[in-house]
Image: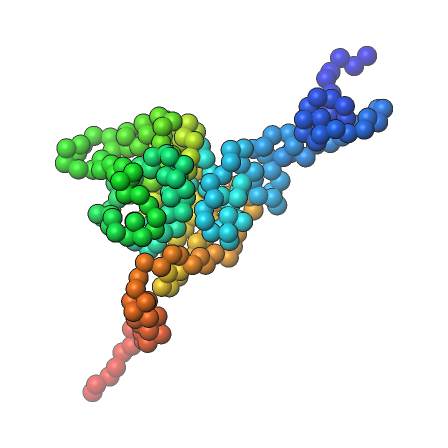
Amino acid sequence: MDAMPSAVSHLDLASPARQALRGPVRRVPGESVLLAPQDLHPALWLGHQLGRNPDQAVASGFAMLDAQLPGGGWPRRALTELLLPHPGIGEIRLLSPSLVATQQAGRLVMVFDPPAHLSAWALAQLGIDVTQLLVINTRCKVVAGSDSLWALEQALKSGHVGAVLAWLPPRLRAERLRRLQLAANSHDGPAFVLRETAAQQRPTAAPLRLALRAGGADVLSVRLLKRRGPPLETPLQLALPPVLSSLARSRSRAAQIEAPPLPVAATFINLA
């Protein structure tokens, strides 16, 4: 008699494991079933599928984006990496629905090292309660020379924070990002880290990486560079909540239409 156990991928139809995965089934004597990877463990998926999030994802507030994110929203217990050409292209407006939802659930939102002073008026326009927003500046003179990421790691490990938003220092070493990802495993909520666009050329421990760029007045172009699932070649064009006045928006559109094209190469003019 063969003493080796049956393969893990083949389970009897009436076994408890099979019942838990598929629900009640009719037993067929001698029949076995080959389970799909996603049935064996929620962290597994096929190459043509979007990965499933074992923890309930946090809706981004943009249906087009949620449809392309594994689990249907921003992941919990994992880093989401956003790459920016420069601050202020709409990243706060992109994240504001999930930050507002976090606050409405009675949980704290922490912001680390914003590159400029945050506008309380603009945040309030987006629905963010600024009185329940904790801003940490680890790069001030008081902590100069110390580990600026220590406070961020502790916040992720604490289990008492609802959402984290952090601007990371440039040219961050890969091992430091891995430490943040390990800390994020204890964080029951979304954790967003914002980095420079040049980081796209380096690998990341974050399971979700997006590149952002301005797509026009109140429009953000989002390219999914890394996700648990197949690549997405076409960027998403997301309409952001407007914060500009109607006059400012019309001037922005007019400037884009009337701006002359940039020369593609230098031109030599002989004045002789």
